[in-house]
Length: 424
Image (tube, rainbow, N blue to C red; front, top):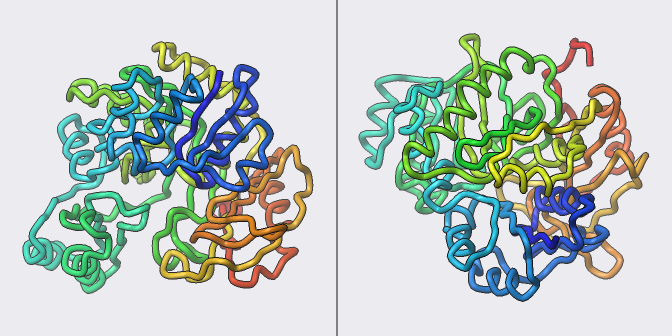
């Protein structure tokens, strides 16, 4: 079979690598792909942009693609799945209507409220003055979210009322996130630890994966602005167990059922961003695709054939997934200034990995010029390491990263800091 992946980032690099491992896959095409993906055996980038629906459909037909997987959220929200299905092409990803679960936070919150899926208390606003009056009345800490897509950056956890009011001005008056901030969702601030919990879904068929924990804040100690993610690790031993079963039974499966009941059945990767509170798991957000960087620490642990898993799920078979007992850690290298403004074209050298069978570089915002790698985005690369324990995976990851000075780049030196003092 031939597989087409839509996207060009680190998540798509990991997906391409995972699909290429399948004995059923003859070739993996990635559009638009990247220079690093072209280096993967059995993978080929094709210069068709993710917003060129007609071009992507032509590519899938001309190359006789058997299955398409959409990596990023924007094409899903724009209806790429619908366009593929309309041409009789097989695609694993939600329709435009179902992708609203990520494309509109109010849509997702309304469904959670209706079907009693645990989440933070919230109110939605389209009027700036009304939103400010609400914040002033309820106080802080409080969370302000742009309703639409903002590349993972449209969320402000405000510790003070002034911070919340400034966030509302940025989103609704200054239009920092464009139309995404025309409507906002204001939530109570949940306390606890975050957990990423994803599942392969087709209608009522739900096959959960192992968990991961992402680090959203830019700097050590979970400080600084929200980013798309600065690192992740899997498993999350202190949050697995009973919490995990509760999250499956009260969050993932009920949400898949709710989407069916609402007439917008979900197909693809259902991502539950959870806060594990003293009262159990509560939903921070739902996404309609694989998380990034969680994909780069979860897929290396998947020993089942990825294509076979997706094929079975699309045939409404709940399959048993085979996972490595090893842990996996991923740390992101980012351009200085990210998630704000940053320079492109900075030359960088990647240190050799310790063991190529357990350690890999996944590229996101990079490009090759001659024999050199240059930065081409905010998150540039991620170093992913598998090891028998999380502690060993962390040590081996940082041993490689600490070999270079990384002029013009930075990385968090405290990924998995929540594990301090625990037996890892």
